[in-house]
Image (cartoon, rainbow, N blue to C red; front, side, top):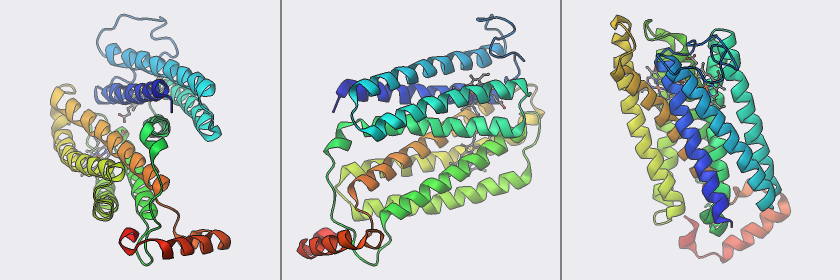
Amino acid sequence: MNKALNRFAILVACATFCLIIAGALVTSHDAGLATPDWPLSNGQFFPKMVGNLFWEHGHRMVATTVGLLTIGLLIYIRVKEKRQWVRRLAVFALLAVIAQGLLGGLTVKLMLPLPVSTAHATLAQLFFCTTVSLAVFTSRSWMKARPLPVEGKGILPLRYLCTAALVTIFLQLIIGATLRHSATWDQHLPAELILAHIGGALAVVVALGSATLTVLRRHKGNSFLTRPATLALMLLFVQLFLGVAAYISRLRSPDDPQPLNPMVGITVAHVACGALVFATTIVLTLRVFKVLPAPVHELEPARRQARSLDSIQTPRGMLH
Ligand code: HEM
Ligand code: HEM
């Protein structure tokens, strides 16, 4: 395990989180078209940061920094890391950040069309999760983790529960992004998308609630699993609260003379907390896949037989 590499991967993940906040500030201030130019801003490499250009050009600067950090991380990983799949994931991270930058430029050039802005918001979350995964894979706790006994028969495997939670959250992020980019602060949000997003929130509560509570029940005392589960559950509560607050603040924003700070602050916090819910669920899912073996019926016959012999020799209490 290379401590410095892991710290650098954590730095890139934290910088990406700040970039998501910077991007969300652009949307909430309705500053996406502060300059119709790209890659230059108003024909300049560094324009005067006045008015909405502060948010739009500031976001481009933070994005450039994250792009450079991602190149740095790729080089660091190619030099220090032997696991081929981690090296490949670092290449994927670089490709994702390049695609994200191009989508950002495209959304400006095309004057913020809904599909491109939504794709830009969604890929931002996927890129963030890639950097978080790189931080997980290079960490000491990941290297030290040892497999737990196979889960008992007749109970829903945690691998399934966590994967279902992850997919549900991802769909909810896409609905949230579509909702957010369907109306600027001076327009009303479309009712059918609000309903879809509330339905999505209920689905996330059921999926993530079952995954995290099952982890807390089955693996009490195993902080490798309970820590991300507890954090994800706490963030989910905060996210629900922020969602309701975002809705209330958006309800009255069309009457405001400009995007006002309470609405900007609450909606940006809702986007940021959504990213954190997704990221902690990724950490939980990766850790579950690391320490909990595949359910017996998924293994090929020879390994299945070996596994069932193992479980006969495993003391009963360890099975749950
Ligand atoms: C490279 C990494 C980048 C990341 C991770 C990123 C991330 C984000 C995020 C999270 C948002 C907010 C979405 C929302 O609130 O719903 C956003 C908005 C935006 N970004 Fe980026 N961005 C990146 C690069 C760029 C670049 C290079 C540009 C170049 C112009 C750009 C232009 C924009 C614009 C115009 C918006 C506002 C879109 C709207 O209001 O419809 N982004 N970005
Ligand atoms: C599981 C819970 C939830 C998650 C993960 C979630 C996630 C998100 C995300 C990520 C966005 C912005 C997407 C983007 O542009 O990148 C969003 C937007 C939004 N969400 Fe949620 N959300 C949740 C629950 C709720 C609830 C319960 C409400 C209450 C009605 C709500 C109301 C809104 C509103 C009004 C917006 C648009 C905000 C704006 O226009 O700036 N959300 N949601």
